[in-house]
Image (cartoon, rainbow, N blue to C red):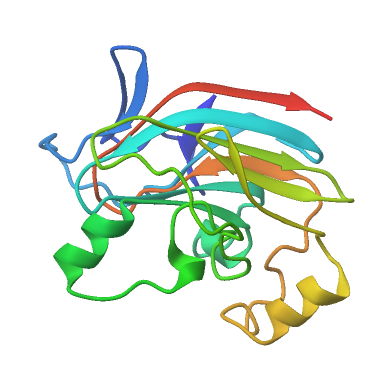
Length: 200
């Protein structure tokens, strides 16, 4: 059921290997790929849900989980909320730059940073578990068994954050109440397994 965003095909570097869904940067392509590299689970759209998965990234790796995703845009990030997945320390080291809190693993990217003093994030190359529980009353992000943030979607506070931040020029960002689940490719190695979702 997986395919590229805005495409009927699976991007060639996204493969299933040893029971894992992985973006393999080492694969050499015979032909240039012109489609998008973010992928969606296209068999069903979800509104209220609980999603859990295990993931790991390479050093400095960057990925994310999209939801309520609709196609027809330049990229999922223009319309879909994102649970950020990142090698926080490795990214800062390799890029010689400091991340904002809303860019780090577990954040609702560019909307809500992690709200706990300490989070458990295993380093690059080691497995982490993430979980999203979404209802119209409350959204919660979990990382390695610990709740790291929660917020009320489409609330006055949510609207204010959208209007005053990165999404102020993207009127369709976060507006859909049902859509696809997606996984982000930032051209760095990433692995997923045990992807599970249930409707609430």
